[in-house]
Length: 160
Image (cartoon, rainbow, N blue to C red):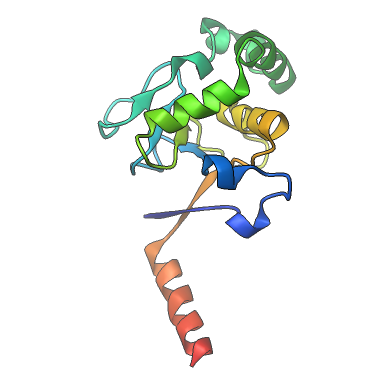
């Protein structure tokens, strides 16, 4: 399975500081196993390849499993207020890039985000960075090797 971003660098907003800071993405433990992995989950799933780093400051509180926070609005309010509110976005951005050890950071949690109504805290972190720093943090998406290979062949044919 090959991974790519939903947005190309040319699609970043004009106020984006990605050239100054480098890029960052979000994704699922189950869909990305490459370099730059940083867990922002409370725990890592079993049988996930070793080598990821952990940034606990972005992990949800123990209330994560409380049924009162299964509601998006309630969860979002508490996560932004309790977890993101006390943090300095620039410091967190810099910390995550340092943890990624020269690679693009990919912030990981458990959720798959397969349906339009699916949500998770990693996308809230992305939104926070976008609001605070003017940087776009896209979600990783999977592209099958067969499809991307066929697309490359088609592109090569069009260039002839």
